[in-house]
Image (cartoon, rainbow, N blue to C red; front, side, top):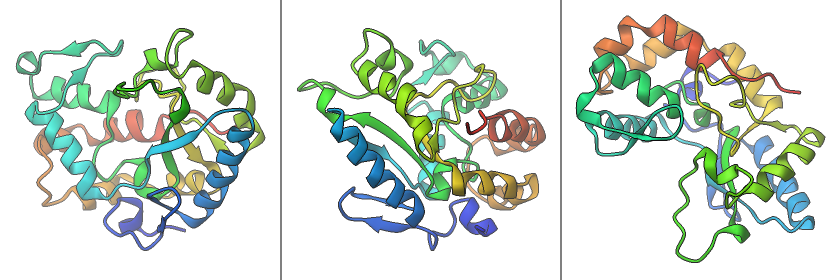
Length: 226
C-alpha cells in the first residue's frame, strides 16, 4: 500500500528507474509494461512511454504553466482557448479537463503511462497527445485499434475512456490495475488537502473552495477496470 506522500508524488521510494525505458515506474508496473511492449512488437507496434511517474513538483510546474498561460488550454473538443478571457473558476475547470491537480495525478503512483507508437510517428511530427491522433485518420489509429483488441488480455486498462464529464477521453493513458485500483481506494480529500497546503500551486484559493467537487469529478470519476 502506498503512503500519503507516495500517493501525492511527494516521495518516490515506491518507483525505480527503468533504464531500458528511460522512465521511473512502480516495479510491478515496469515488469508488466515490458511484457506489453513485447506483445505490441509482435504486432508491429513500437510502444513508447512518453510520460510515466511524475513528482508533485513536476505536476505543479505543468499546472502553474497552464494557469499562467505559458502552455495552451483546450476545450472539450480539443480547440485551443484564449487564456485571457477565462475567470479563475473557468481557468481551473479548463485545466482539470486535461491535466490533473498536483497531488491528484495518477502518474504520482508509478502505475500510469502515456504511450505512443514510435514507429508510426512521421519524421518531424510533433506528438500532441490529442484525441484526433487516435481517430480513424490519425497518426496513432493503429495503436488505438490494437489497444481496443488486446488490452483486455493484460492487467492494464484505460481509466479515461468515459463520458467526458471529468477528465477528457485519453486513449493513450494506460493504468496498471493491480496497483492503481488500490491506490485510488487509498486516496482521500484529506490526503490531497495536506499535499496542497502551503504549496505554491496557482489558483489554490479557487481550488480549495471547490475541492470536494474536484475530488469527485476529476479524481474518483474514472472508468472501471475490465
